[in-house]
Image (cartoon, rainbow, N blue to C red; front, side, top):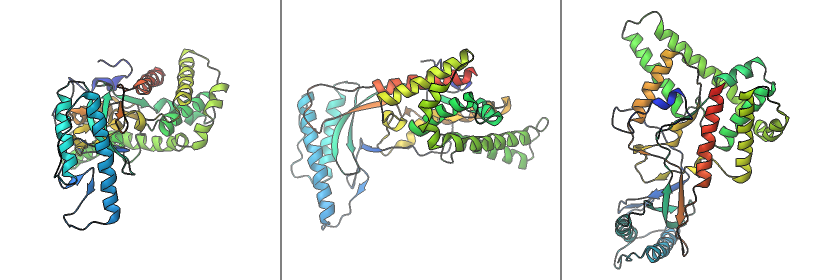
Length: 370
């Protein structure tokens, strides 16, 4: 799918995901843990020793996990008409590992297009679930901040700056869109990597035309400083609290401002329709122990500066293209269906997820239009 919502950065993923070059790894936010494969000495990241005696707390946890798993396994197998695996004589967690592996193999052969997983909450409530994903293709949702910074710098209290910053506060605080100066963000690592490469080239005496390297370093420093300055306003709780009032008071003076106001009204509608909407609820991470092989949501949804020089833009595009080319899978919007109780029909509602992605496309269009 060719993205129509993103500007220059949309061209940087070419021909899908592949293996091109090695880069740093970044942590991916996740609230739910999942396992699609097992180590017989570990289960869902809870480590069990080999001692024959275990604490009553550990034993109760095992009992709770087993009870939840096998109850949901019964419901799943009944619904999809799968044979229930035999686990008699097997100890925990081997009994769960074996039952899941056998069931997953039989389930995959049905060709439902769904992923089978075991989901476990922090309170050890365990259930088999099917997961349906929504494909976002190779789109990048990078929201530019440079123009907004210009308005903010000229007049912190102008209606246009006020409205744009309120939208940014909604994106960051409510929807959890990463900000490019945050130390753990993917794009911050991108800028830092470019700085390191440039400094190494200078130290090794490479010849450059004019003063390109030092100019590049100065530009990155300027972008990061400006981003940190305006971020204090974007991260302000009061900024988000006044969002609705700001929208009501704004009077657009041209077409671009009218479109910005429309997007802000859409944001308020999303919040009313889905009070808990965010990236983590719409695009959760199902960590199966191999998350390093999955392109995380923080890598393709983020704020960025958006008005780099040609030299910096080319370096940034090359870095991102090479980095994202490492991944064969992508953390996508998804909807799980749990089998902790009897199920009568498949129910995977991706409406919220698709509404969120459509909103991101609108935001990108509007901000780049300025």
